[in-house]
Image 1 (cartoon, rainbow, N blue to C red):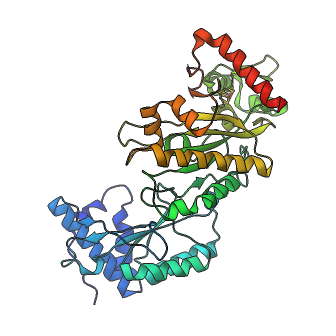
Image 2: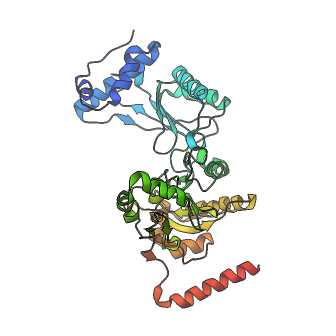
Image 3: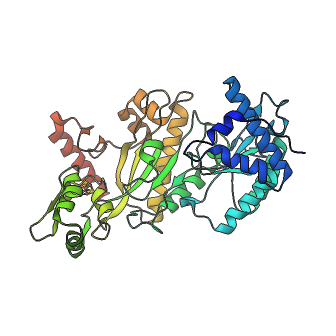
Length: 417
Ligand code: SF4
């Protein structure tokens, strides 16, 4: 017999103009064919109503995991479990998504079936951290659920002070702007640090995110400690016939107002004969013109990646955007990919040894200084490392010529082997 609870405040939430999260939970509570799921979700609604009444949260943490792992589960035990017994334990299981979030509908059904067998039926595709969030199950059901999905290829993600589940954008299969093999980069990084993901042993979290082009659909620059963004370093490709086509259909005024004038660095000019001239040396890869005129403009042929380090949300010292530590890197050979993974290893080792408890990489760099950090990870200072393109170079301009000379010398020595 499913126990129902009075929920007048939650009912109100459903009356507004926007879809409410209550509706989904209530659907499970009222209509799911399995009485166990009805019971669990009804109890959850009861506790939530109680929280709204008393203005208090009643979930507390604990320690729950599966054999051999130290993370991947967010334990939730109710402090009012006697009043709402069916949702007394309501843990969340974090599961790694495939790179680019590609699923077949069969696999989605399979995941849904496994979760309805062992959990509450509530799922988030995907949480901010990139994981599939299977929300709500008790301690005894965690291991069987994990065993079942592990059997057909899924693994737990990261939770706690560890390498977190990585994310990659949808990538070249569906996006013409892609400049890198996002999914390969993500898989190589994640697979290499699987131990650090499953057994939390870092000062705090460390996130990888991979975007195939400077549109940065993963928001990696704001969210990832280690952000990889595909880019190009030659001239962007311009199809002048297609530009003329845009002028014909949209009109010169429209293009000037909406593309040319919106280039942040005035790198575009529309000529009298309706062709476009791009001042490539001034293009900062904001991607606006390429996004607006995808048939006419596309990234150049000399493609590679930029690596930024230290992006993160608020925490202690406010939001930080990533800082460029590797301005451009070609990824063509196995050695190229290996050296990227090695760089990540250096960064994670340095982070593990030098960060304070509960301190993200960006905060650590703010505390110890970027130059010390670069020395620590063995990366040479490069004039192309900038925090804000065209505004704040880390190179002091009063000794610019000497420094530039030294840099060119080092590059020449490197090239000579
Ligand atoms: Fe200008 Fe941005 Fe286009 Fe570069 S990508 S030319 S900066 S609008």
